[in-house]
Length: 469
Ligand code: SAH
Ligand code: SF4
Ligand code: F3S
Image (tube, rainbow, N blue to C red):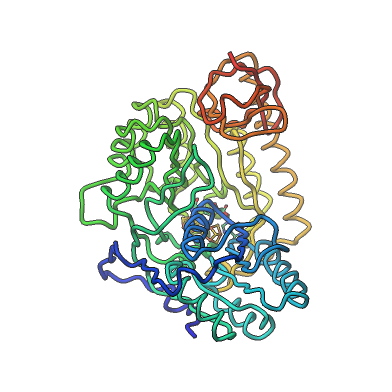
């Protein structure tokens, strides 16, 4: 048994990050373990986790398991979990309860959790104490060891716990079963070293580690050869890409190289304002296939709170960057993340956040009530804002966010925009504009997977409707 360790997870040293290209091996005995058996994976959390699930699925299919989308039919159930806020936790524990009931009638089911919650000491202790019906717990650093762990869990009938807490390495050549034939996630870096005081991610995902440029470019080239239309470059703060490598190679360089592969669309998340360089803005503006869509989390509009959050920028610096982005990238849409009710947040601090929203008029914002995460510095601060106040602030904030979301969408009425129609709907297709607006189109399915010119005929707060030009 290898349990997670918070102190180890916090460590950052100068040890060189290992790039391992041949770590994933699956031997013949393990290859047939899943023959005739079905698996179900449920994913919580961010795009990073969704992409990890694509790796997990491919590994399970290497073991001959077959996917089902109904948990009740599965012989193997995995929950790929998120630890970012308390409610993410609660959802997972609810599912663990449902699995218990299921196992009472089908005791041979193998069930486990992985992902960010598995990296938390307290969660694993709780599972060991109260949820002994689980068979498997593994973390974000050792997905490739799934075949061995699963095979041990099946033969030994004992719970297998293997969670590494170190800084992590960079693993290449892990198989992947992509959810979409048109859009792909591409990791460019793992982990995070920002240690914002409220955030659990640096503890669950390890040190910031960039993939080598050639591995990323090769992956994108392969996607181009398979006719993929869009890649999203993934990392917790992609703008810091390359800073941990001994190369003079930045996110701006990477964006340019990826643009030159001629993949029709490039997106990237998430941008930390601190590392957003002028070169990056220029490159985004220069290449038509880098989408004019920037997710730029502000978290708070109060300098006092930003400092307590450890965000490393002031609201003035943020706004300077915001203006540069808006001025230099034509028709850019900008979205953000905001936390309300951070410890010590006063009405005035909250008002500062509202002022920023009035200024930036975001296309969209993801808004959250602060949730104390054990082991983070903010969890030790006195949380002196009442839940009632937090809820009220969230409500007021969302009201303004929704107002601007609709107002921004209204600008699209009657305009013609390019939409990648990647999803089948009952009577049509849907997809996203370059600026990340969701569009529904009444059409037959012949255009599935294509980028089409669409005239916008109808506008709602969260989506647009249109017809093919
Ligand atoms: N790396 C990204 C954020 C990833 S987490 C960045 O730095 O922008 C996604 C969002 O969840 C964050 O932007 C933040 O708004 C929110 N979040 C993170 N930790 C939180 C916490 N403890 N309570 C409430 N919201 C939180
Ligand atoms: Fe969390 Fe901050 Fe890292 Fe984003 S940059 S993952 S909010 S610590
Ligand atoms: Fe959640 Fe982990 Fe992503 S905590 S938001 S799944 S990095």
